[in-house]
Image (cartoon, rainbow over the protein chains, first blue to last red):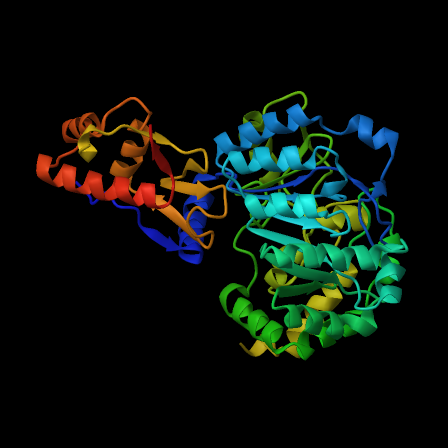
Length: 361
Length: 96
């Protein structure tokens, strides 16, 4: 008999051990769930937001009970890490009910929010039953910059209030920003602000088109040169890129279109119950209103992720593919097909490779 | 009352999950365990967790374990008591 005590191992160790198993067994351990596309902000770069009171969106959204039912199914299938996002997830009146149910299913929950709808009551509830992490997106350290992005007066103050409410209750918090032309002058200040609060911080400079293929968000993209300059200005980021390259550089080992964990260990569900292999790839979905998660995962996904390129797929031979955000999903929203390289990403990747002297690694 | 005569039930502040070959306990409330660490259970511990149902006495759980696993009664009792105390410590089980 093995000793029956409870070995408590570090989160990182556990996570690594489990990830190895789930890839081999194709267990849907990582899920993301957009509870709504509606949002109280009108961020210039957003890829999915709809007006807060859109009756059309509300009528199409999954009902509370339908979400509970999906939570039951994904828990049964092995989902452990679950991201609740939107739109603005807190825009749903039943958010706390949904959150509480998810906690009771034993998911390790991350919550992405703009922070503006966090009230003392919500913060108290989160403190009592905490998520693994709340990530709030902050676009500037001044009202002017933040609201230039969000388009809503008063959103800066409310976002800061939301941050304070979480910090007062010691709820695990991370700040994030999207780096774009509208806030390029305050990026380093946002980072300093986060560091000053003692919370984790990340930024993402790669804006993608809207899900309806509108290119409006792309108008706010930094140039590829600026993106790489931002990388180089951040010592930690450079180190992480270099370590990543040492591990993963080289042409892909598979000739599949999908080279990541999409449909292997991760999945995505939208507010209307559409199941997809990831957040980006939404051109062929499985409808959870008319079928089970198990069927979608076991019958629909395997064929989907085994797709091969139909043309001479340039990215399939690229030794920098691991460095690049190019994927069939992004190609679809940007170019309307799965295989045409996203020129913007390609430029960033090749500039990065040059800047980090990666060819010589 | 001797621990072997006690009956335990699972608290609603922790969730048992089996994912791949891992048995884990996920705390729901902040005061249960450390959120930075995940409690993983081996096969015997997972079976004991399953047997804690609010009806079965600890002595009966011990008998089941002896029946199902290769273990001496002394070792089974020692491990079981140690395990239950740990579970009580993280408020995963309560008497009742």
